[in-house]
Amino acid sequence: MEPDQLLFEDSKHPWEDLGEGVRRKVMSYNADVMVVKVQFELHAIGTTHQHPHTQVTYVASGVFEYTVDERTYTIQSGDSCYVPPNAVHGCRCIAAGVLIDIFSPMREDFLP
Image (cartoon, rainbow, N blue to C red; front, side, top):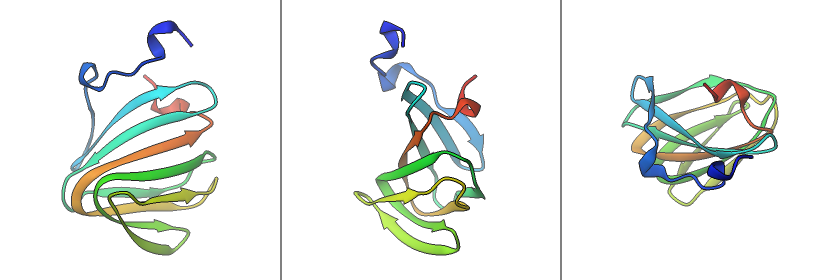
């Protein structure tokens, strides 16, 4: 990791607009782990998908209906959930907010 990658200063990095009320910032990462901030407008959908990465999601703000392998949970600020590799998952925002996703290994598909 380059020295300037050791610190991620949020205010110096723009959001990536994913469309339909969702945007993200890839934050700190190396080959083993990646932290990503995802902002949702009210009623925005995190499309159902799966990937081989282990994921932990932390709710920084807002309220979400979060589905993992056909089980749906309501999670809110301060809650977190574990998503096993290859689990089908997605969410629906029921109060605008921000999720912090941690992936292992890093998501190469999120890099430019």
